[in-house]
Length: 266
Length: 276
Image 1: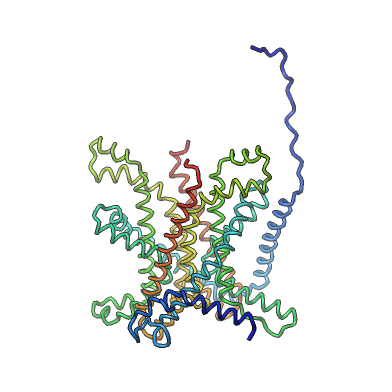
Image 2: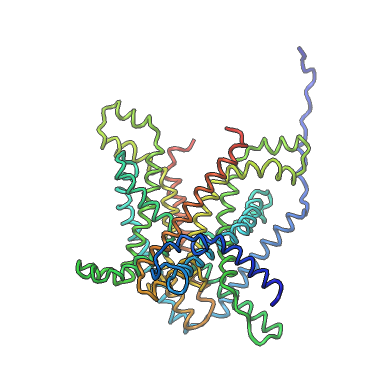
């Protein structure tokens, strides 16, 4: 066995110690043996829990990528260079206007076609399969960044011009102005909007189940098909998403109070 | 005190800064050039791949799919608007019971994905087939179109209720007090004073909600309703021609952009008395 594989297995074993569903202290272990949601081979608890972690992982992978692209788009919309602004606006118009599902399909099938063409051109016999997690992350990042750029650019507009002028008067270079003066204020202004986008992102991850990623919705869907208890399992899916939304809103209000503490009251 | 003895002669305007290629300008030109190149390549490819047989076969289907999408969204937005009124008033009610029911409704439908709600209704209600048959509602819930309409109506009602509530609560207190001082009844106050001001606030969010519904309605394709997305998927599964998706994207972009522009014009016209 390769060392990375054993390390991965150990890491997995370590993480699953803290699994709140089926771990040693998991809640689902409290259920009676043989119930629909119990862990192990008899119930669907562990499968659904795995899907739930896939949902969270997908959202957490998309967030930084989308934020970084969104920040650059917002900066591009800020400049006085018309071509740069136009390029950013085209991006935003396309990815905000397309239905998320269509973006996902286009990325998934389009990437597959592109990879196949490239692979054949390079002399391979056939293409490689595109991982639906990767395709999903790319598609959701495109959508998220388009929306985030709007939130961030309106936050940029809310920062008074005097801040730039003050930084200039202090002799700060543009990079330092951005890092030390503008960004800390930007975060404070943009945080509520970004919180909303995060909630939308969590809900959009459910769409990735249609290209075969085993997320919450797909895993509960499989359970529903096998056990013929569709209402029960789809309710579980909805409850899991609700739990995620509640947890996020708690975390966000914590972050917001923390960030506001260092701000000036206006 | 000083007196200006001689006038400064008129100065020429400062010279226009010469155009200089900076790194950012080059980047902007390259990125815009990439978009333009991609657009031209796309058009060329679509022209090249234009196949009169496929267009004759799938063109009318695309148009009928477009009709299905627009009908579905129009009906669910209108029914949702009706349903949103009691929900919004429930949310604002001082009755703890009513307001917590309305809050729960709104929280559920805004906190879960639309696709999960659709599955819950379309597949999930099948678990209650016998009960629904006994009440005579099974005929309704058997059909994917009806389920989609039902799910969308409930979903958009929750969002519209929040828009309505936010707009009504944004009207300043003084407006209520002024109306009371004039001796208007509660209904008159709401109808003549509060609602017109609230609707202007709500205009933009309503437009966004319609656009979100048009985009969100694409998921009905998964439960076998042949809307624009459904027809696209069907055409792709038969031809394996990627241009079906491109055409769908073009259609969706045109709808969304048209709607956005109409809404912008509408907003400008309706708020022209507020311009200073």
